[in-house]
Length: 480
Figure 1 (cartoon, rainbow, N blue to C red):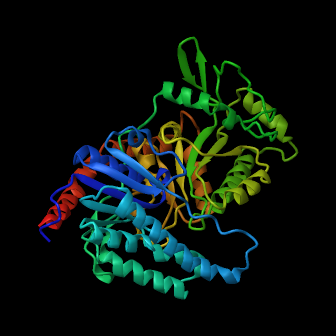
Figure 2: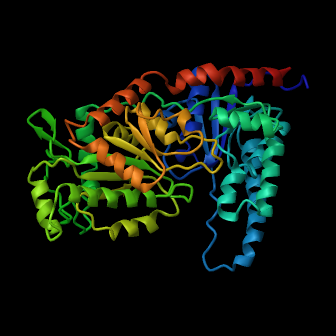
Figure 3: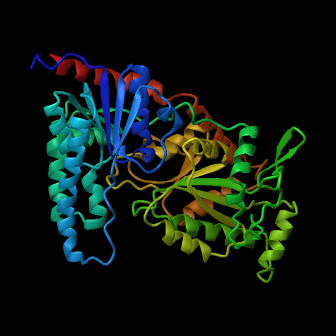
């Protein structure tokens, strides 16, 4: 095997998914280019825009595959097993075309898992044909995600798990996202993995007041919701209230001075993929409970018309408990279902906005918010939500659904809180936002903890300490 051609100075990052929605793999590409000085090819599906740092780096080259078409509605369900068999065959052929013919031969393939089938199969074959090393970055277990729709007892799930384990063991090296996953891989899969915790890159940070105002100006139309639906932060007229946008929902510009409004709503951000492993219904129920409990605490008369209350709120009157504006970012299959549910809530003090932000505006939104909410419940119980890492990078405290290994990330009462039900989340919202914006000491304490965490670790440092050595070692061994 000495005729491997020597070191090529090249790596290939493989994602059988939308690269714009795979931030960890984008960060890998940046680190391979910046910290190891490799030329990097990314083979993935298109869809969402990648971060400008990736697009503008001269050593990173993105090769977009054609997305597999959505299963058409109305086709008999009896044909679904046939599609499940045909789909991976076609995907293998497309992957092999890109990995073996379209891109230059790399020193190493770095592949995201899941999805496992057919990605691990194709990358293993490509690594053998091109005499390259092969590293798996374990984000979760693919078979557990498949089990969400087919059930753990499904034969397809058992076959999928076999492929995932068999080809995962063939890798020359492995990275994973938690110590719990590292233990599972070692004990039950016979795979030795290095833990590389998700950490935010440098562009996730607290936003300045000027950056907040500019962001809110860009999002003003979306935040005021010009859809003919009136709520506690919108007029429902569909018109811009300020043509020059000196005033937003949260900020005011007078001359050259920008100030935060004292009567502004609290801005709460949640990022979701709108999939079954994130029960968005918990957040909706908590919002209803917050709305009703605040009305009861303030002894409000049920006969008060919503429009009269909103007019009072928007006139500048402050209350012990603020309005809440939830901004939900992300794309996914259940988005329309929940948007329809939101439209029927008719809440007095809570409003929702759903949107998709650019890779540059998303960190700014997190850096401008007051609280993050994470609804992620791991299909395996062994991965951690990267969205929480991003929130902490921006100094944003988090309320997250409690599950087995979430405490590897969220330190209760230091940088966030955990909840197991909608009632618990409602209690936390009441506790954190009482006296907002100036007299909410519990929220300020969590923000200080999140800020402390944001300054302690960054992706480049984590990657340098835990991934770089493994990748260089794997490349070196492959050259022997």
